[in-house]
Image (cartoon, rainbow, N blue to C red; front, side, top):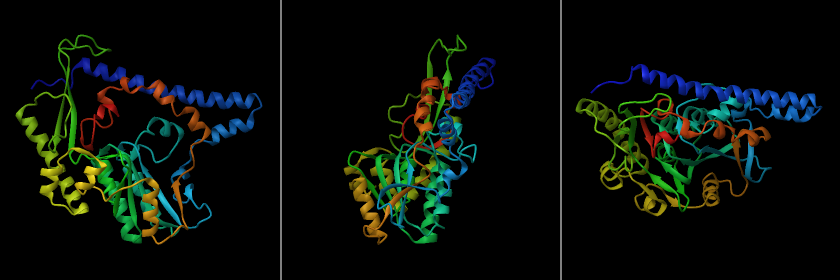
Length: 367
């Protein structure tokens, strides 16, 4: 197969697209400082301090900094809610939660960050139980497993219960994280499963005729390598060479075996049942319960009540999360990233989920 990876045209495309992604960061920083300066010059010092003070600090991820979610706010018994509510990456490029990081990569959950939070929570006597709130299509293999490792550490060190509540979707790596809990509850209407591995897309630009717009004479093709029957349902494909297919498929199959083994162990169902009956399809809550992928169909409140009972707390508890509530700054600029860096402009070459084996449901290009 002819390689296009080092062609001058593609290098130029990468350069142009990377420059496009860099510019909004400088623009955003200028806006932040500019607003603060204007507020100060206009004598609105409290507002400028509020604006700058709303930028998260490193302590925002410290488990000693909790925000009340629900329950008895005066109770000293905390149920820690950890939100796995975005695609899962392995770790952030920075250990700090500065405002630019929050806005530009805030659409992901970092597996090792969640693991660290669980490790720290295991040393906090006020934490009586942990609730994993899952709403994720999955993500990187390492990031998904890091969350499960964190849960295992918390359980081993404390013996306290960990439940998972599936809000809308727990697919692939999101499901891996959910079944690390002792019990898995899913809301009616949620989607569960996609037990498989996906890798790609591998792009082929057939006869490029323009540069910046990446125009082609014969179109663009995408190929995915999958593990699990029907895992690539709906994705456009093109054949790879036999050598490429064999090497990549073997890698994906190895990861798929690990996934099936974990599901079999955590859910106490045979591996052959996972492969031949459950497959890599995704199911609604009733079917997921029938296939033993979850324990109960329940609301959030019902899940929390069951968790509180398992922790022997009765009604003397409060649910807390790590960090502060959404700030004024976050509210003002939460949509900024979407307006200046629309997903449609992000090329596949800088797609953070592309080109690697994933526990993931859907199209990595969408994230």
